[in-house]
Length: 98
Image (cartoon, rainbow, N blue to C red; front, side, top):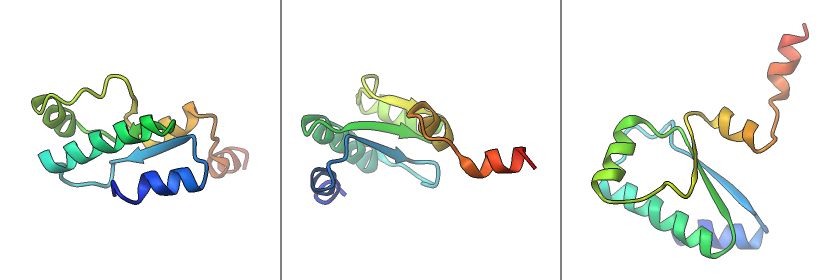
């Protein structure tokens, strides 16, 4: 992850990347450290890292490790993160207008 994601972001001129953790069942100390390293690397490349789907246990693991994610945007769900970035869910709008 740490080797490929930053390279792809630069290649594709990505300015913001949402890292959604909602489908990840367990985040141990190694994974939390990798996420932190990824976010720092992206920052140095000018890519804004946004995290979504962070559960309480993931937050606690990060805090116990002394990892500070406070400078990054975090959201409870992917939908919240995307909406904040100005991305609309057209499928939901279509269903509401039926």
